[in-house]
Figure 1: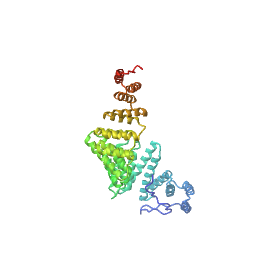
Figure 2: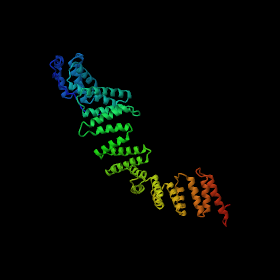
Figure 3: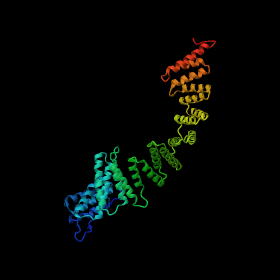
Figure 4: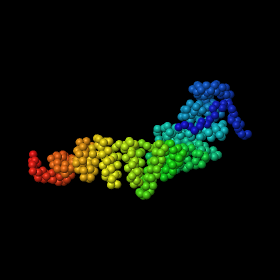
Length: 447
């Protein structure tokens, strides 16, 4: 976390605090004043370690309720902040604020700045803590300082609203599996209040609103925020990705087909808009575009994208993608194109026996029995079949139809060794083969 600002003026030493007519200005004791020059030299030389040693020595002799102690605590806190040691800065800053408020040692503006800085420091401590209870403790301390700062700040500030929204969101999601709905709503409201404080609100406010909506599973309003974000920053890939996913989530959350179509269409348009900007063009995302066309029953665009993607590699050269292309052709009664697709598939994926089997089925349906048998033999030889027994049984059928009875009998016997073959189907085919063999003039069925 980067602190929004460091608010303490560094080493305004020995200068009296402006006091009212009723309140005398606090004074540094002579003993401490005598050492301030040396302290200034050390800090200006950035010799912080010796400066801290000197401060600790001076504090040991300073009265508990004195301006000396307030000033030294303030300087010590500032040194730690300058070094980036935010953890160590908390205690002296709290001490300076306590004394400054109680004894009037610090002006109101410095007190407010200290309150805001302490709220930030405790928030950071929470972010760095591993223990949930410790994280919650620091967030509670941060919230307390922030409330005190808000009560003493005349008007809301953009910086304050952003910090408040961020802090509330952290409190709401400290248990990520059980986010607090009421605190999430408060975080969202704080961020929304911050939007009206500037002509061009920072993107971080919109992101906080989006995060609160996503944690609340409010996909509809999340989509609206994401549309604003892609308009603001159209080259941000993450925004497009989230927008597409949000529309898909909306489509999946309804049982109303018309409503689902509306959300799927928006997802498709978001994906196409992103791709026009050069984003979301991975093979997986290109396939998602195909799937969205199919879900909207836009078959021809889906086929065109799938064919083009498989040809040029923008869609993964996977068996399931070729199967989808072939089955989509079949559903639209374009069997010849389905055969062409699978003939390309077996060339592109020569190790996939299942594609050979599917091609054989289509060829058989087109009465190209000899071609079907050839591809079935290739399927069995290659393997990687979903139903290896069925492939052999089918091969036996084609051999039988082509009057290759000896081959048919051999494949039928081979099919018998697989669990995916129904015994009745095998028995009927075996009987038909045996009858055909016995009917041959040169019956060799007994050999």
